Length: 247
Image 1 (spheres, rainbow, N blue to C red):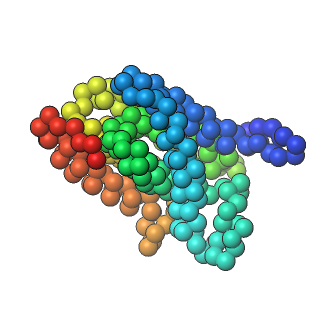
Image 2 (cartoon, rainbow, N blue to C red):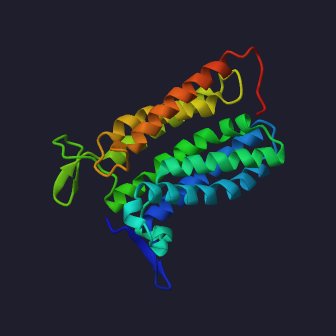
């Protein structure tokens, strides 16, 4: 499939960007409706997105460039040229969470409640965005003989983009069900981090284009750290007696 959807005045519009934008818009709409359902002014979700989306793009690029420093070192123009590819979801998530935290502190809102509201939006956006990797013919796994393998450069490989998209979709529905049973703010977001990281750890082991850190797959290291830390915080919050935190 041609990665370029169409051109406008000589500028190529890629399917990858269209899918990412679609995921973001779907996520914003879901969070907007959830905030409204909870009796909050949903307009703050729009303001939040204006902080977090640009931060996510910057974070995704910065994370990628730092882990591929030997390639980008000294070439500033290459560093900022995201049209050639090179965005890492973990960098996007870290930057978006930090941006969201600052936003809630400035607006005097509950960070944990806000995080719970947007958690399902984040994972459904990830599920949609992964299809951009398929169109680009990237983020795939190693050689496989499985019937659902896809052909890349004449070789049948694991469709890891599909594995992650399906995993994320499953996590999305789990979060929708769980948020009705949560005891305290923060639990939905923490569960998102745990479940996503579990799937990402496994799927990352199949990929052939992993970013490396000290000889190890960076995404797997970070996924393990998130699972451990988020599980501990989840246990702490879950066992607070009928008390919603506003941190």
